[in-house]
Image 1: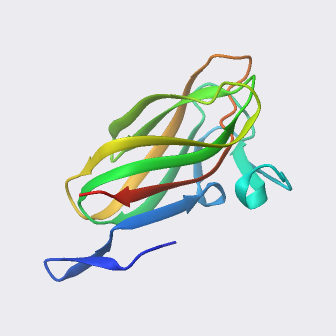
Image 2 (image 1 turned 180 degrees about the vertical axis):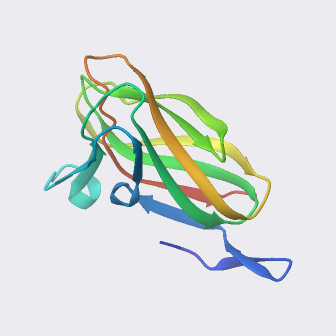
Length: 150
C-alpha cells in the first residue's frame, strides 16, 4: 500500500513512503504465517508471526520505493518468550539484532534511522530469526514501514 504521493526521479515515479502489513509477507523459511485477530490492546487489533517459531524462520516483502534516506519502523509487541530478528534490505543488513523479548507490552514501535536506499525501484526486505533471549523464536508483528527523511 502506498501511503503518499510519489517522487519524480528522472521521469520515473517512485513512492517516498511505503507500508507493509504482516499478512503481506512471503514466508521463505519456516511453516506458515499465523495471523491473530482481536487483540484489543494492539493497534489494528492484530498481529502475525511464522507459526513454526524456529531459528532461521524467514519472511520477505517486495515494494517500490524512491532512493534516499529513510526511517524503518516496525510495530509489534514484546513478550517474555519472543525472539530476535535481523532485517536486510536488498541483501544489506539494516538492523543486525532487533529483540522482541520483554514484558507483555502492546504497540511497541522500533525505529532504525538512517537507512539509505541508493537506487529507486523494487526493494526487497527480508527478516530472519537469528536468536532468542527467551524460550521461543516468535516475532509478533503488525506492520512495518519506511518514511523518507532526506
